[in-house]
Image (cartoon, rainbow, N blue to C red):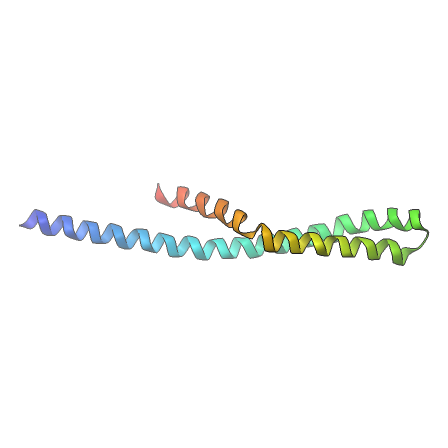
Length: 103
């Protein structure tokens, strides 16, 4: 009888531990996704747009056209990644956290 109770408590404890890990991983995934998009947006908009904008400005002979083309291009790229690739990135982040926390 004592072994049965001990096994029952261990199973419930393991179940609670797995549920807690799932909640922690979901929260950590959201934090890292938001940080990833912030970092990606800053890097793309700063380094890439300056370099390419000056090149296109030289090519078209007008700064407004060069900087305008690059701004529109990076906005489309950011929205594409945000709406279509968000689930794929979340999948890889969740799997890596599950591997770390299950050990």
